[in-house]
Each structure stands twice: as C-alpha cells, then as structure tokens.
Image 1 (cartoon, helix red, strand yellow):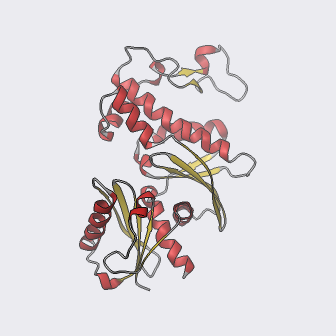
Image 2: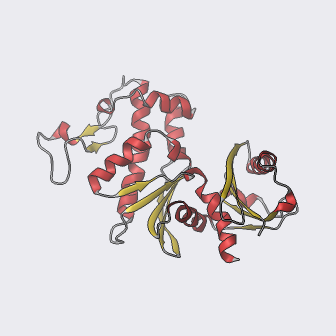
Length: 275
C-alpha cells in the first residue's frame, strides 16, 4: 500500500497527515490561509516538500472537514474521496488512544460530541461553544483575537476576581460540591476587572462549559472517558480546567499526542478500513 493522505480542511486552516503501509502517522502539519482552497493546496505542497514524498508514492487522498465541500475533483490528479467528519473524529481518537468506548470531544469553532462504542461511531450532539466563542469574546472584551496574547494574559489572571465559587455563597461545602467548585461563571466580574482576569475568565468559561456538556452527554451510557481533540487542546489552561472536572465528577479527560490532527488521521483511516 502507498501512503494514504488525510486532510482536515477548515475554512482557513488545513491539517494534513500521511499514514504509511505500516500504519504509522507521518509528520502532521497545519497551514493557515485566507480560504480553504489556498490552505489545502498550501498544506499539500508543503507536506510533499518537507517529507520528500512524490505524487507517485501516494495511493489515496481523503478529505474531511467543513472546507472539504469546496473541493469537487481530484487533488493533483490523485484518487480523492471524502470521509464523514464525525466518523473521522472517532477513528482518529480510537487510533490515538486505543479506547473502544469513549466520547470524542471535537473542539473547533464550536464543539461536536461523538460517541464511540467499538465500531459504532455516531454524533450525539454538540454546542455552539468553542474557539469561535473564545475569539469573539476576546475581540469584544480584550480588543484582540491573538491566541498567544490571550493565553499569556490568562496565565497571569485570577479567577477569584471573575467567577463565583461555592465557598463565596456558602460557609460549608454542598453535597457533592466542594467550596472551590464554580457556582457562576463570570458571576463575580467587576466593570474594572483586569485584562488578565478577563482572559482567564473567557478561556475557563469556554473549556468548563465544554467539559460539563460532555459529562452530561454521557449520562446513562456508562462512558467515563472523554478524548479531547481539535485546536483548543493546545491551550495550556486545558491542564487546569479538565483535571478539576475529573476530580469533581470522577471521570477522565484525555488529550492524545496528535489531538490537533485526529480528524485528519481518522480520514485516512476511513479509507484504510474500507480497503
């Protein structure tokens, strides 16, 4: 088998991976551009160049993601097909974690939730909360949508100046809720809150809401393991917010090695599995 290329095409960002005949992921990369066509071809060209891959080495190209709808023909004359995005999410997460039963949390512009029970992979819901929310709120409240600036500010912020905790409204812990559990996101925010505190509040609001919805989506399923994928997994605050939810609800959130590229990996695996 030649190399199978998986490409997750976003509106402005494209992620590309290759899987060789040994089933090993080869050098995933990400490219940003002003439109999906430019980012796709830019990513493809860079991938070929950086990995010294020739077109004749490639057996199949698999596309997925919202931007894939803009592509109707073969890429560079190569056999090209499309993978359903939610199936790709599940296949990629399973490849990365070797879990059979899980909820895959794809954190992009919004967030989709995909339940995996062995080969049964299906979307169980989603929320309009994700990177788009983070960027929009930051533009309004911080006058920037530069992720590095936002995360740097947030690392210096104090949530005590933004959120209301159980301990702020009750002298004792409530049943199942310790005093440091969040009672109200942004419930303690003041009009003169610092940019650092606001940045931390925004990121925490987005991540905590996603985490809570994920836990609720698994009620009655017996699933207690959740695999986080997508661009938001790169936020350092993930290492603060999700362990807190784990402790509170006795669940497990996992960020795999190639979390950002799981959907592209899954697209390539979709072809390999069919074959």
